[in-house]
Amino acid sequence: MQPIKFFYFFALSFFVFSYSFATQSINIYPTHWWVGMKNNRLQLMVHSDQDLPQSVKVNGNGLSIQKVSQPENKHYVFIDLIILPNAQPGKFKFSFSNGKSFDYQLKQREKALGGAKHQGVNASDLIYLIMPDRFANADSSNDQFDDLRDNASDRNNPYARHGGDLAGVASKLDYLKNIGVTSIWMTPILENNMPKMQENQWIMSGYHGYWITDHYVVDKRMGGNDAYKNLVKSAHQKGLKIIQDAVYNHVGSYHHTVLDLPMKDWLNQWPSYTGANHREELFIDPHAAASEKKIMIGGWFVPHLPDLNLANPFCANFVIQSNIWSTEEFGIDGWRVDTYKYCDEKFLNTINAALLKEFPSLTVFGEAWTNTVAASAYFTQNNINATFKHQIKGVTDFPLNSAIYDGLNQPFGWTEGINKVYMTLSQDLLYKDPMTNCIFLDNHDMNRFYSMVGEDLAKYKMGLGMLLTMRGIPQVYYGTEILMKNYKDPNDAAVRKDFPGGWSVDPADKFNSSSLDSKEKEAFAYFQQLANFRKNSPAIKQGTLKQYIPQNGVYVYFRLHEKQKLMCIVNTSSDEVSIAMERFKEILSDSKQIVNALTGNIITKPAGLDIPSKSFQIFELKN
Image (cartoon, rainbow, N blue to C red):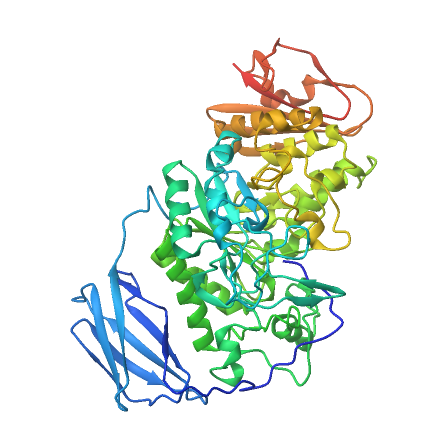
């Protein structure tokens, strides 16, 4: 999620909202838990619209209260529990000294939701990024609700909600599997009960999902918790994985913990609105000022997204437990973490350790929008001699993304053009394992890839070819396969248009290849062929990368595995180029045939290869 500039700010003060209800209501977070978790400790946040006493007891064997804490806002108590070895699934009654009580349920953990769960993603996967509101609408009954602060749905308004939902995503699983996708990452699906907000001169809905107001409720405009469970189950049955989008750094300004703050330092508070400076260099700069690093971590992302103080142990527990809860409740396979570089660093290692303790196969990769390889590597497991060591396994690889664009759009030079890709990958020694990075051409915060290469189909194929054969875990943005295009003009909504055919009233259904024009069909066929080749290629999924210095705009790299050898060639020049095979004899020495992996054409012991202008070629080396 990228920073947005505003002409106003939303100032939050402590206890800005007051409550006056005749009947006391009590809410508990997490809403329920499970027996058999590896961590037997649990902290309940109990919230009421009236003051709560600090004295509380629990009836029933299996739970032991270790500590009860009450912050300055007496609408809250935090109950630290130990789930004892003899605990059985069931309900436990908690009673306060004033006579009020609540029931809390421990459930039995499910083995699976339709198939294997918590599988994790790796370099064998192809991730497809979906913004559910803009992808497909299979249930028009949940398009709008009068009891929500934003109760409109209007497809004619690019800044409003459009009605896409999780049932819509579920209805397209066969399409996604057919084009070679193995994993689905959706922008956040949790409740965003926010009114429309002003961003610059536009009045915007939270259709993208990043304004979370309840961590335990899937937005009912998406279909609610049951629709999400059904989607995960259906995806797993079809061999597809689900990645959930997390936001640790902030919440929406109508989140229940913001409307009634548990304690003043639940949020990062400033005398007046202070935004983050967005400079990740502060973390690797030995000369950086501590005050500026404090602003980077504690400054707010934007005014209507209150910044959580993740150094506060109660706030940290709330976020950690909500992510464990979602992982177990819905059976997801991984997390993509929004605004990762803005979070308290110790917290990040703590939550990653907690997730992996419960779900060892789970994958977590952080969005660290960085300008350099060193900064990108800093936020993951790395080989840098840094004072703080991050433990997440992978990040979104923005430096490689920028390098691919330069490789496609810049003239070839000593440090320009395709040399940028070579130079960027040469710095992989900074990562502990660059294969765990998520690599991409675009996403929901960026100009569309096809537009960024000038709607040039040859450049599209070169970029997609590199993405799907390079080291790392590739991610594509919905509609890339049918050449969806646009720049962020005037804002993000322009690159988040509806997938044509996702609504029954759409004039063209581009989920059906017969509705595509000639260019779209060519792009779709190329995408599908390359993605499905990748799915069955051990060299791409597990092999090492060997690259050669680009010459005359031609970049050659190999993917090597004991079961397969691939030679990938990118010719960015406007001329056909003949390359001498003698240069690559250390790899080609045992190869008797070279087979074009996409056409099947066989070349026997060639002295050279003629590579068409502006093309990507992939050859399989046969002994």
